[in-house]
Amino acid sequence: MTAFLLDMDGVLYRGDRVIDGAREFMAAIADRPHAFLTNNSSLPPERFQARLHRLGLLPAPAAPLITSALATAEHLQRTHPGFRYFAVGGEGLHAALNAVGEPSDEDADYVIIGEGDGLDYATLTRGGNMLIRGSRLVVTNPDSNVDDGSRVLPGGGALVAPFEVMSGQQALVIGKPEPALYEAGMRALGSTPKNTIMVGDRPDTDIAGAARLGMRTLLVRTGRFGPDAAYPNDLPPPSWDVNDLRDWSLPAA
Ligand SMILES: [Mg+2]
Image 1 (cartoon, protein in one colour):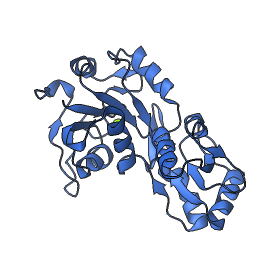
Image 2 (cartoon, helix red, strand yellow):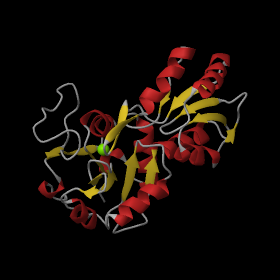
Image 3 (cartoon, protein in one colour):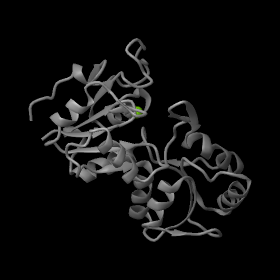
Image 4 (cartoon, protein in one colour):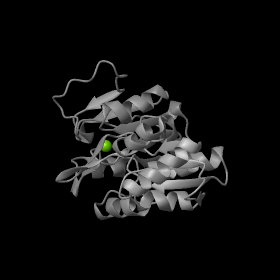
């Protein structure tokens, strides 16, 4: 059976506004395996689930919701059980890491950067020194910035940059378009790239990363990438390219 990985912002809602066709789409896939994926690492998954619920977008509330913070924690737990970490980011990052790793201010295995509060002179100094001594740098997601309604906030890519410059290390990137977040989504659903469709609003992250893994992809032009934008010719083209979710119908099975 076809499984779906769903980006949320720009696909299902923008701020507090539900995007046209999103509720109907969610109702249509309610009995298909589906999971929500977000590069946003600042908030715990419960906060996103509460928003989806409030907006009437959760007809099947058991669907997994995986943030790049959770995917980071899962990836490190699989590759380095019992890891020690120094984290700089919001509550979603700290909660996800604390569940599987051990915080350390002195000799962390990983210095992990995510979105949200935390970056200042003291945390850059502490993290930068651990990196120079051999800790590995990880960032939850590579986005340069994030829409927050009326303003733009620094994304994971912007926040990790000072640590990269200070230490000379290049961070391991977890979120879209890198594989780890999609793979966490497929593991949660028991699906494979062959039977999974990624639904997203960004060609450079949602679509490109999923296409490289061999998934089918559905681009909806309801986010920052609008109906009139030319599809970048250096990126893999989506399987479907629609103005909004009302223009797409579910393949059989
Ligand atoms: Mg989006």
